[in-house]
Image (cartoon, rainbow, N blue to C red; front, side):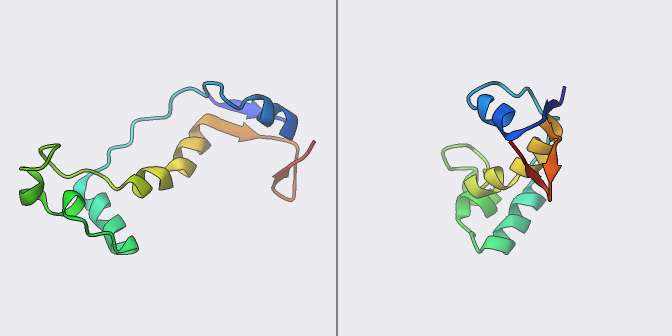
Length: 91
């Protein structure tokens, strides 16, 4: 369910509340490697599947910033805002 905010006060009041759940998004190795290309983060734990097998997680893991960069996808599924003026919420 998408939560709709009509003004900035409503958005501020929602701080700390549960916004719900987004759809599942699979993060595959191809996406991890594309992110490594874009950011220059070629740490072995992200891009070297053979070496990562012996690492702490038994396989590669996504970069923390990749996870953070997905916020717009999740936010678009969870929230909508109305009462915009030049793409900004107003009081």
